[in-house]
Structure formats: structure tokens, C-alpha cells
Amino acid sequence: MVEIYGLYDPNNNELRYIGKANNSAKRLKSHIWDSARGKTPVCRWVNSLTNQGLVPVLRVLETVSAEQWKEAEIRLIA
Image (cartoon, rainbow, N blue to C red; front, side, top):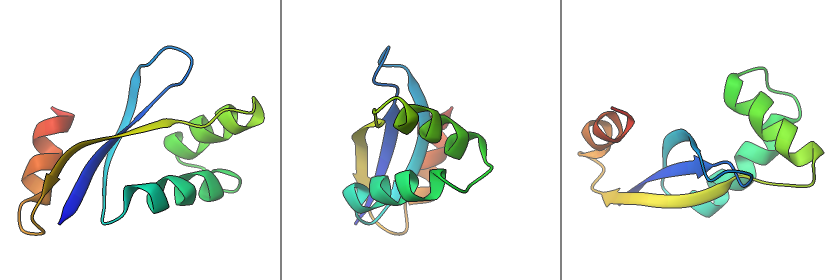
């Protein structure tokens, strides 16, 4: 099973990112680790939070089969 998750801003509860993971808790740790050296918009955003002593709030939006994750992710982003 694959988790489609959202990362929410802890300051205002705004949804900022949707992604997929086999283990969303592990993926959140990866987002935080990557943010220190990454240049993508999500890395810059997560890095700005960690500099404030905050982390994104992760919510699993849907759990789907490995065959269905692409469609689910596209639908949730839309």
C-alpha cells in the first residue's frame, strides 16, 4: 500500500505539498534531512520551518494500492 500525504504549514494549517510514500513518517524525516541542502521549493520551505524550530504537519490523505497511487496523487493535487 502507498500513502498519499500532505504537508501542512504549522503556522496556518495551509496545505503546501502533496506526495506519496510507502512510509510517510520516514518520508517526513527525509524531507527534513533533505531540506538542509536541497534547492527545490519544498526543501526551501521545510528549511525555513526548521530554522524556526518547526516542522511540517504530515497528514495521510489516502492509502491506495501501488497501482493506483499516480491517479490518486494527481486527483488530490487538482
